[in-house]
Length: 463
Image (cartoon, rainbow, N blue to C red; front, side):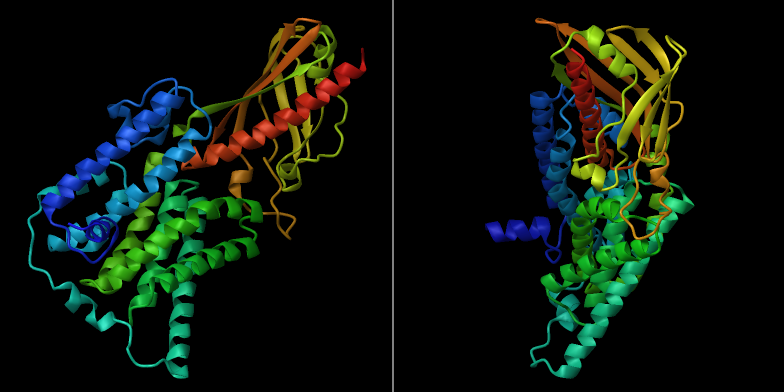
């Protein structure tokens, strides 16, 4: 088999997939993906990723099985998984059609546990008669006649309808997920963009087959319009929409290609409607429930040209900080301003003022001048969204990133110097966790360095 045929079999949507190639290639690709993930975990994580944890439907269990690892590792593994996701959906849809079933079954590829059942059933389902690809797509082939102004206008109307319908689904899916089932989960950030793309690609290609570029462009416009609706209605701010767009655009593009293929397949309308109906069921699955998200720890440190005894007073409380220079603070992330303490020793309460309000931190460990630890009893919103509105109705601002406890550790160094370490333990209630935790770690690290640098300046100035 030539290379183009292999590419068509793995990534295309026209070449039929029989059960034996589906099984053999599936096993080969699964082994390849696990082999690379295992190699990455062996090279960069404290514990190699064992097979049992690897096939767990809970992302927190898969990440926890690797012990400690650099914050970039889950992002690399997620990007590595994208082509395998596409191959899995593409081949599963064509294998279903080859078995005489509806291609909408491929949506189960995104549902934990059910995806393994789907793969097993498709591996054993016998081939059944199906219409030749030419017969399926003849009615959808591009017209050979020169394009007239009327046909161009008609195509524009179809594209506009496709964008509007897909964007409406995207906006409603976001509202259902956030305000209905109260989850910022994989159904919202992975499932919804994919189904949005399916709707856009299907509607655009239903009457006449359009180019791949036009199909992907319509899906991108649909994502942009859906985000714009949420922004205009003050349900989200610009910064969070931009972060979500990194996931939404490629997933919507993948879905649009599936929608394009469904438009020329068997029972195309039923297949597409089934995907739309199946999405709320995915949103109701408990895999992304908040209590399942792991507790993460972010640590930052720097060295100070002063003894721990001089640093300690500025750790328990410090004067107002200068205006922020960090771009993240100007983008709306809560910025530390000052800190004060009421009382002394275990049981005292530290108040750390931010631009969004005060963290209330009861002291749990008091070991001057080497260690201060505290719980977080109350916390303000994590950020102020970029928005023309004073109030943005985004629930993730209140508890989406939940700070649990913190610690300052002072280590005496030669020459009356001090290493000052700050650690924050937090839970981020958003999925996919490996993606959003990167932003959480980065934001907390920037906050740490702002506070630690201010403590260093105060300590070195009081020599």
